Length: 257
Image 1: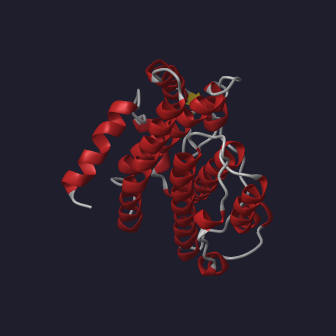
Image 2: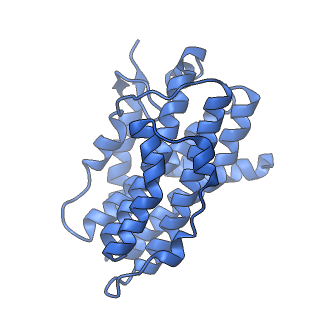
């Protein structure tokens, strides 16, 4: 990616987010002793992004057999994370032309758009999962179970409990998670080794599209302009990033001294 392309991707991301990642988090993330945690949590985040997209498809856009197809698609990745079963070789050997196996709900006006964008997102997130796992194996970093940080949970607490507001808010939350990931990849690229820097920069293009897809879907589904909800949820997201956090994770806030 050229410098101009790199910068052009970051401008709308930085405009969208309501705060920058604090230097204190970058300092913590760039410490050699935190590399294992950073990569493990990044890999888990890729799976969670794929799980969230699959959940949205199953909940809103396809029939039950199609939902089962999605669950089967994710199962090998979940088995590796939750049960330490399987391997990178097995994941890379699998192939899924998933779109042709999904039956859309006839009564959902946005099912086609939701499925198209979310299936593409799932494919990319699972590919990134394998890329992180490969980097970990090359560096002899063993996977270990870690607790979830507060970030996504606190963000999702802002989701309203009536439709279509629930779906709209979930999509907006997804947009912030993807955009924050982009911003951190860009910042981290200046502080890590060349291999990781190239990898993080390579993620910017797809991840930046993900946050935009989430926002476009949210506005398409909403009966009203979503700007106010975007701003409200964005304030919460910024507070999570700017406030003290007692756990270091890929999306954590200011590290405890």
